[in-house]
Image (tube, rainbow, N blue to C red):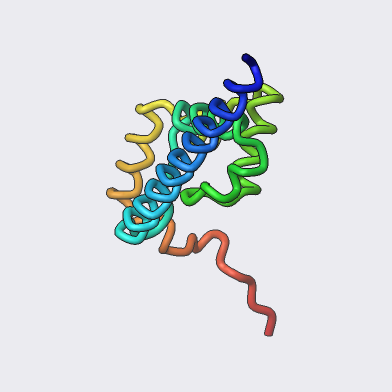
Length: 129
């Protein structure tokens, strides 16, 4: 009895694999079209990265054929970071300065006309003649 069902199940399974391959091929082409319309980089959010890592790990090395928004090395870095439990504390850099200090610096810049583009006379290069 099992000998009869085994070929039948194998036929159904292979048909399903072919159908899934067609779905993947369609989605890959659709993804190429959409990526062509988006200029520049696609910036992902942490929860989006987590979802991509979770789904991509299940695919193993085959994920390299599907990735379009990041390189394979970036995806593997995400995997390593997730495994290590790394989280960026402040993606903008150091701590922000208090609002009062920022406002004071801007007020001084407006009053004195001094800013990044204007060199400070106190630190002008010395000339030896």
